[in-house]
Image (cartoon, rainbow, N blue to C red):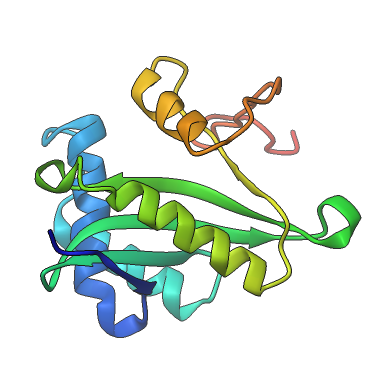
Length: 160
């Protein structure tokens, strides 16, 4: 069985990153809600161009992008060492069961360590038992935290 090759994406990888981001959308919200590839690619290009903090790691198997990690480095964090926050971890359905997700997580851990970061944080949907079991198998600690969201498409935090 082939081993995945994982690396930090560069602007030249925009088509592969956009295709994977769209695959995430299709997986979670379906074709009626998922954005088309053109605006997805524009978002990826903008996030890379502006160096806004979003980073992408791609997992390739036999030359094809099959996995994606969208993450950001955040500081200060515990003892000023910061954290790596994983926004998305996704593996194409036909590549699942081949340890691509685990390889991406190990790559993220090494990337974080190489940058002096001592922690990885992430969230899952409350009902996503598969993802929760996956992270726990890798040794993650389930935290007792409360997650909040401000929906800025409403009148929340407008200053009025």
